[in-house]
Length: 88
Image (tube, rainbow, N blue to C red; front, side, top):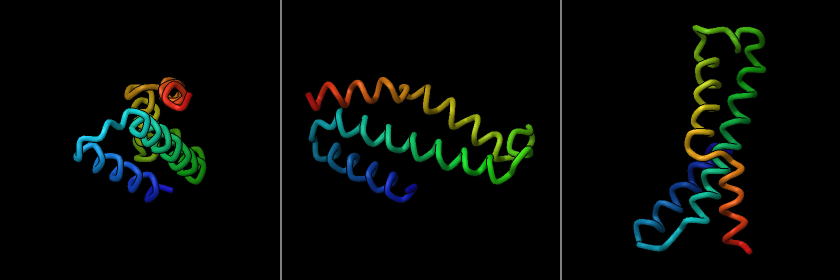
């Protein structure tokens, strides 16, 4: 899933380089990447168990950073609204 997210992002970036307007595709790529990132970091926390929530462990920091980045870059609800606007 991570590789799919990365490839999708690269394809959208390549289209932007050619001057094609990609607002819907950017929102779709970001929404997909955030969903994949949430799943991966959540699974990592589950694997580590209680240590996944303790400060000082890398997995805790990654999980916390992931939550902030997905909100700071535009919440998934906003991304979905942008996508729906372009589809309709």
